[in-house]
Image (tube, rainbow, N blue to C red; front, side):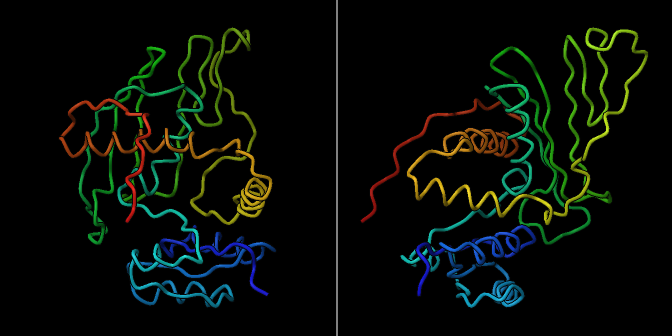
Length: 248
């Protein structure tokens, strides 16, 4: 018996494999197919995880398959990876109103179809300023740096300093916790994420991680990309959602 929801995935990279497994094992979903720019990579991914899906020849072929609901694909350094930093900084510091960014081309992996290094300065609604960056082309292990400087204390990754909350502190002290110090996504909660997603669909309720909030993080990424293309010209972040054009 066919499952209730068909899923098509754009991209056959590392994260896609975890989504394939999660959708494969959920009782309401099946992976209909995968598209990847490199021929054969999608089919290899599906075989690796025991999925008999379709390898789409193009993105249009995927979107024209009415059996499936499509899932994400990166087209810039911030869309592919920096979006997580944009998400995090909005959670920590509030909404961003304006960005100014610069990017640099590849130095190690010349196969990148976009600049793999981008740095952006930010203005926030509350008057704060900050910085976001994503570096995909460097000789370094995976790192996800978080530095928050505040009037009542500062956090740098898992190091904390605060005269107010920790009187007598002379320096940063280390908070023992799990850090995002690896690019390996196998320990990420894909299974409960997909279970929550399907529960929202079945119950017709909005998720706490809604598309409306995700849109705001992507709006920041789009503004950063636009500014980088304009060689650092400041760009206002547009949070307004425009109506999609009607399809014939």
